Length: 445
Picture 1 (tube, rainbow, N blue to C red):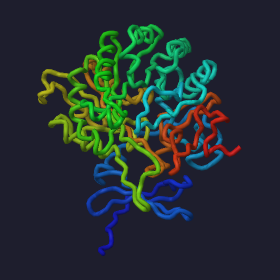
Picture 2 (tube, one colour):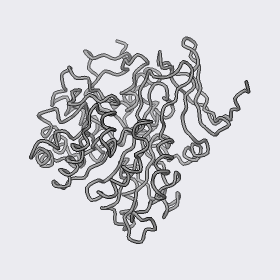
Picture 3 (cartoon, rainbow, N blue to C red):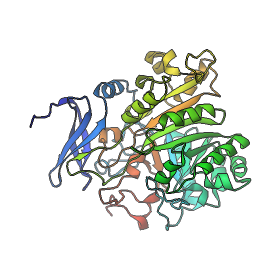
Picture 4 (cartoon, rainbow, N blue to C red):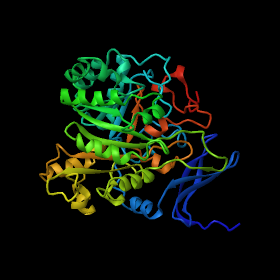
């Protein structure tokens, strides 16, 4: 057998999926240019994880990293990654998008859901939610972006009250991460949320055909998704489509989703593409998760010439391998038949870096720069690709640069990928809301 040709790219840290111990890791490219990450656990053996489809593209993104803005009030370091998060002094970037998980209950049971949606536990009280708002205020101020999530937030009867409390605390932007079932079916419900101060709907939207939802949600709910979008249009609130990209299920519909969003850009402000991840499903010595790189190349290939892989740039708030995106500007002079062009085609990376503001939320980086330049952005479309990590793909250097946090009432803001991390048996590291009665394997009391 011919020995595998390896080109060393860099060193980092990775996890053993069984014990979650942080291990030295090497990132390397094979002879086909595919990027891999290898490490060996003294107790559980070696594991190599496929990280990116193209080494040149991987290295280009890494080279475009933005300067790091550290958290304002870090906590003492008490343990190695991924334990002891909250956010500790080892963390290198401050949070720019913070989540409040208001329930573990859900009116769906989606096979690909990473959220705490099992149900059966008590929801946090309004007082505990107030404490989580205070965490965000102390971490990034009230001008930070807040996302209400779950579970399914619309399972709470007091969701309007939760939104109102956030606006009363001074937060300018609050969006709800939802499957849209209640918004679509309950007359007047979305109006009540908007009256309470809701500024955006983050709608799970995995494809444009019913069979996709049978795979991701267990049943065909496409008509419900379309109705939820129409309700947003009627009420006059912007909607972002959140797409869980599953290899072999909907990764061939990225172009169709893009075209659907462009055709409805009067109400759809953005598309967030998120490769689905799960822990515990891998071969003994090699794991093949889908990466953001795969999504970037697939989106470009399916965009009918609108996008190329290098039109999609790092968003600056975290590792360039975690958050990338582009803003599509609507312009009659655009060469593409869609009437849109990628903003990155008409600016240099130097101009982008000069106009970049670390205070811009992840989805607003390009929009804020273009607005200052006088470009009309109301009918444009933001594309974001987020590379979440699980136990087999966790790069601990990237984890320390995470800017997406989940808040808990005791004052911690936990990096998103740490908060949702499980070992190969599906056991969580962090209990929901940090509650003692829901302890995770990372609690060492």
